[in-house]
Amino acid sequence: MPFPISASPRTKSSGSLDADSWTQAALTILARNGVEAVRVERLAKMLGVTKGSFYWHFKDRPALLDEMLRSWRQRATLGIIDRLEQSNVPPAERLKEMLKMMRNSPRAARGADIEAAIRLWGRSDPRVASVVQEIDRLRLGHLKSLVEAAHGGREDATARAALIYAYFLAEGWIGNTLDAQICAQCEAILEGL
View 1 (cartoon, one colour):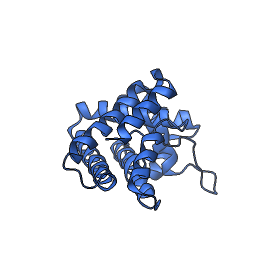
View 2: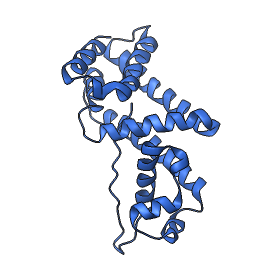
View 3: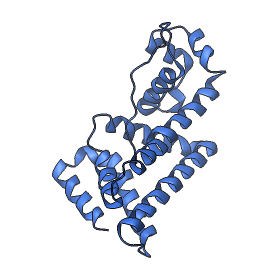
View 4: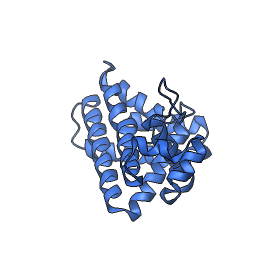
């Protein structure tokens, strides 16, 4: 479920960048060029500030990398689950909304790029791989509960949730090559699962 994350730098009233601005800029670089490209000097240049501003918010680069993962976890999973659960609509409608979220926002492409970059990063970093596995478990668990609630506690809810999740992930990779009608047809099929 690669979901959108804003990239616009935010400043405090004093005019200095906040930690989230650094984090979002780092996620942008990660999505474009991979984790090795996430460097303090490059971020400072991109944001038009000195490196000293970075150290006001982060001890070092590893602290920034940790914050990038925390931010991704919160924005692309926990925040979305919370928002859907608080929507007070039936589970079938929440499932429909989740299916449409990925392609109904211009920020969705950025979310998909960040998702892909973090998953690639996780292939070479066991710590990141464990975060990705945790996110997969959270998302699959949520999808399973939606499928069970929407379809009367089906015994194959885990398999159905896995198919829906596979679509989410694949749509992030190939979504730009599919037209809206094909995506809508896929979503209609998945809604029936």
